[in-house]
Length: 450
Image 1 (cartoon, rainbow, N blue to C red):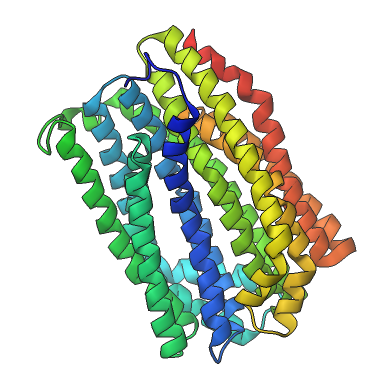
Image 2: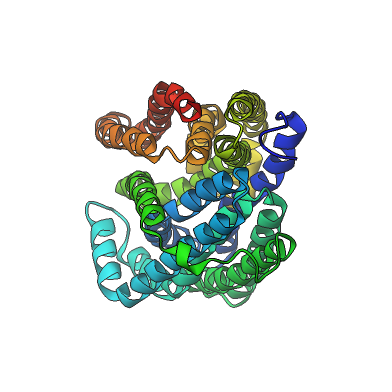
């Protein structure tokens, strides 16, 4: 099967999408398990501490999420052009960037930690104990940065090669290990936020080696482990310039995305520890929904990238149009299903995640925002996948440059009038703005087939 000679079927999309959905959704699922484990411990308000500490890693890791995206887009296009050497070169470039950035974060952990918690504490009503436990979480988990960021390159490469089943297996392995360690360290040993950090650190290192094992397995089947390696092409000037341009645009885009999430969490702290903890729990459900829907977006990355890389331009253009249309249809169906699920199961989920008391009450009050979230995020997520596959990073950057400042302004104005409900309203508006701006630029992608 080649991108140039076959059409896109719903079966093709589902084969790529459902493992990718599982892989994407286990990350917020793990966050929900963190919430559950801490809620059962003697230190339930450490939920807020982990929420603050996690913001730093969300900002750092999401900022460098361009590694996965650029590797996925470039590798998919190389695969569409049947250029195995460039596909491997894209992986090497991404892996070196990820590991290098991770090492720098470890070396700069003291000033990064001081600055981050100074900013998180500014204007927040979070207690000194919560901030202290958040810092403990940061000091432990930071050592996993080189492994976590290098894994991004491997995950993007697996996606682009159409092996989302391997992506799922690596993600599930990492998550199951982390859940087991969470239960042992937090519930069993009562280590609180530190236990969550040790579990995450161990799982990130193990997940890196699992992903690399799957990468090597694919290479073995695609010309062997020693074939198709052309080290001289790894650092070709033209390829480096293209990689740098794509990475810089997506870096800016993802930095603004991570900052927006961090702003949301930090602003939740203005309403006290209970609201901050409730927002952290709800955010896991919000992310679970969005990332589960990301399966069709990841399928679009692969299919769009292969179509654009195809040597037969007319066949590639037809395949691109089918991929866009059919992935949107499946994503919309999934969004409606998730909305119905949260409408029915919202209260039981709040009861499952938190014990009876003020945190659960706050979760229940703000749950309607999670109920409608699938319908709000689905278009933006799907468009992200299409633009990543097309490596149209400039449009992704510009979309975020427009949306993020408007979100910040809306959050200040709306939260000032309706408190945490206003904050959630602004957060929802942010995703709508992202979708509108990307949809405006979508017709430009047709130019890639001229």
